[in-house]
Image (cartoon, rainbow, N blue to C red; front, side, top):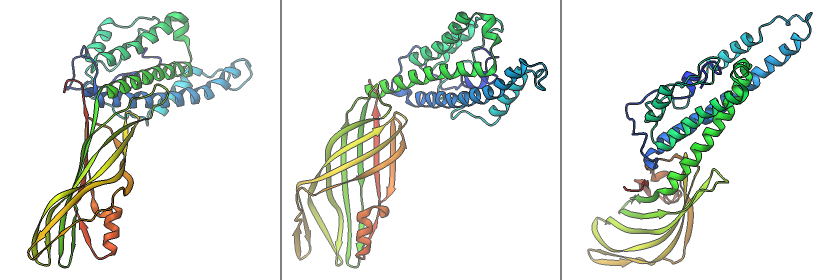
Length: 361
């Protein structure tokens, strides 16, 4: 990337080395998920800041260009390049990348183009390739630099370096749009190649005078299936499984009771994602299953209605990772609030685990 084309090239184009580098000749997989997400978020941030630079600098440059046409105009002798560069410096003074140190990158901070030429250092390009987290990211990074060289060659080196700062920023917008599109496509591919598994466990303890029962609800593991679409950045994965409910501990009227059997609930899960964040919804339908309870001096048996349904969100707007473990307090759930109105207290947690299994794991 030409250093003069954007003063912050050294802090924007490529990122600070990380000691946790992965061999660049390794194919990208969901093991590189976090690196891909960070590179994508950085590229999208650069699209926005370069777009702002382009627009604000063009607004400064345009009237000065017109003033140059009129020797009597008070701004006819203003150095357009100098004024535009100072405004760019001001804009960048408050900008930081979402991920200044992208995970796993160990290459150079930038690849410079020698002023007045269309040439870039072969040594820097080799270091860029070697320091990228995996082979496809390396290819995307190198394609970014190759596009700069091609632009320069097409325009001619003299014209390329004569461009106003707003024009330089405009090229950067195009380059980062291309880079973000390639990264998003790669992110979709590694997720499509992986396998998403969801498990959940909830152990509510319900208490009242003469009543103390801990239930156990175990869901899954449920495999979610679905493919991303080239036409959309958001897609859904679906899966079916079962939730098994048992009584883990029970004490009634001072008596310790034992429980056998289980109730079953069919679960339909839908996970929505854009490759960066995710949300998980569930729909439940009660299925056959019985629970028997034996206490001193008596016994009982569950009489559970069949085909009862319910639905709700397990979570929303969570970071997508190769493994995500989320816990929430049961007190905030609707069933716990309803029981509380009847004088029962409910404690415990629900834990949801989402795992992304990479090929070969």
